[in-house]
Length: 183
Image (cartoon, rainbow, N blue to C red):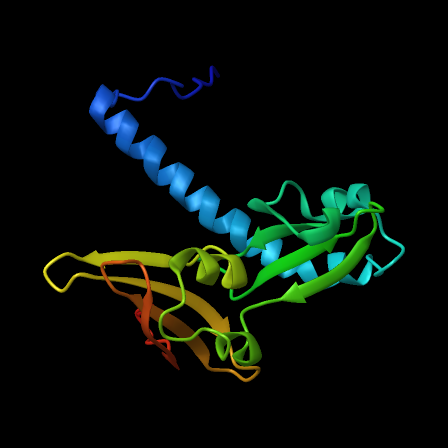
């Protein structure tokens, strides 16, 4: 009895445009999965770090390359580790001038949201909260809206929204419960 192996070549080969769409979908799925997976690992990685003891190399070994590095006064630097849009945290990890971790903060929290005030520049909001999950511009209204996903400590996913005017200054901000469809 002879067994025939199935052909490895599909009967329909996608066209270049279809292949590009498939690659884009796969990349988007993997990016969302990677963000979610990283967020799930964060508690363990955080437990492995100790303020004043852990080094920059320790932080990078556990969290990887930061989304952004912010220069601080006195030679310190803050590494931004973004978990948006799939996660509900953004971490700011400060490395002192001595190369040791001096602070690790999860910044998507009410006490940080309270510091976002009308008139604040867009860059300062980005600096305090990290990269948002979603950014939308409403040209007719002259407004830009940024959203961050977060959790209030319970079971209700939340969204913190900041609305900027056409000069990139905060008009208003506030939190609402995230709707089941992700809004």
